[in-house]
Length: 264
Image 1: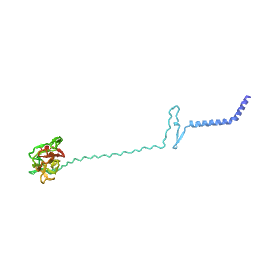
Image 2 (image 1 turned 90 degrees about the vertical axis):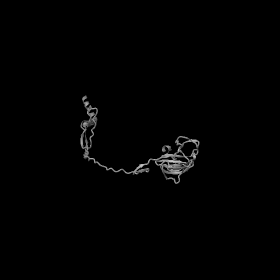
Image 3 (image 1 turned 45 degrees about the horizontal axis):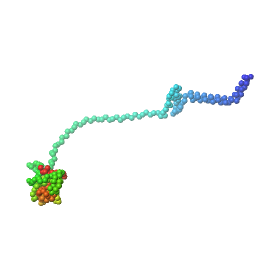
């Protein structure tokens, strides 16, 4: 009695729940098939028309660091081109030609013109030694060149420099050129009287003050050492307290120098 009731109840349950049971079984079947298909079968991927087995890329159990996916190149690597290095041309060693010995003909030395002050003696040019002389013959120095040193001036009554050398003479005595040269200028100064400047070359000049110029002497005239260039005039107003004298100044390259250092 009880057995019959169980069977009836089972049949009634199957009739009412049979659709759901069948649906559940189908779902279970699909799940099992999917697991088998995706997790057990090897996977193949098509790359450039070829199937690549991906099962090797699946990490194995027990391996902590999975193997990374392999990068499959899409193009085949091209072989690098090997360029040949140009070979260096062999240098041709040429035998050195023997040194040529040239013999230069000796030429006679060029003739040079003798200096202006040269004198012909027996056909040989000899240089004339410069001759210096005092501006007044047998004269005494009454006042020396002081340079930058201050000396007492008897005319002005003060201490000042004296830029020349005073040679004692009498009024009208002949005044001589101390060295060969050319007259540069003749003029009259209010304080220094009649003045005459001569260029002796090599930038050496002499200035004579208190001298009346010789007749016919002018700028550009050539004079010789010891030649009379004028007469003592005793007309130097800036030194009028002194006796009659000739005031002589000299410059070397424009710089005042002691006349006695040149006339020695």
